[in-house]
Image 1 (cartoon, helix red, strand yellow):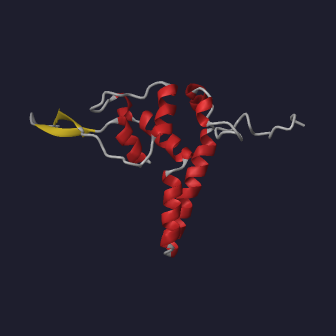
Image 2 (spheres, one colour):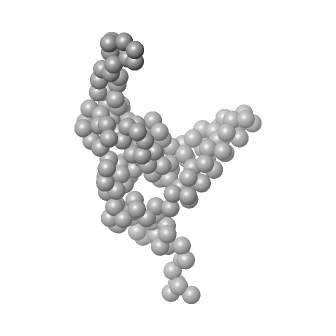
Image 3 (tube, helix red, strand yellow):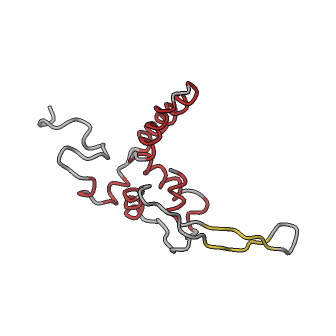
Length: 150
């Protein structure tokens, strides 16, 4: 026996009874995440939402959508997608880039739609292919990108 401890405690990113998520170092939390479990959990919720929409069960859709947007796993996956895409090195108006595991985990813990208001976009002009004209491009902050991914 494991001394009375559950077997999967060492692999879990959710807190044990009496332990808070903020008790561990965020860096070790980010590196210890089992991404297969995270993707499976989010995919399962998305599949349930799609089935409920297909069956016209709109109250269930609302509840499942709330579960998905407030899920810790979905927030982790949103931050991972934002920090691993092509624009990961491009900062928005606030100049923040989530490059360290510590900053990524802190960002995932702070993602919330309560009182959320998008920040202004950083405006950059890029050249159009084939001409010497330029077109505007708006670059959102990392937090706004993660909220959109969520």
